Image (tube, rainbow, N blue to C red; front, side):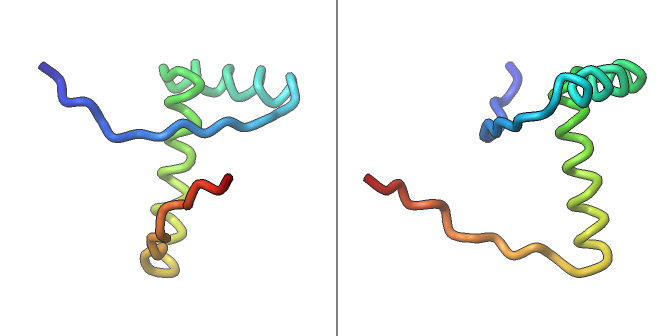
Length: 65
């Protein structure tokens, strides 16, 4: 049985053109759009941390009433 990953959902708003072009790029990489965007984020984070050191972890957001 596969182990469930600890993940969180984020939502972004983009124009229809950006979504279409991103979906096209994702297909070229044999990825879903979600997997493609996730990969872009990972690459950017690794690049930043490679040049600047680790990004500090912040405390979790406290839910406010």
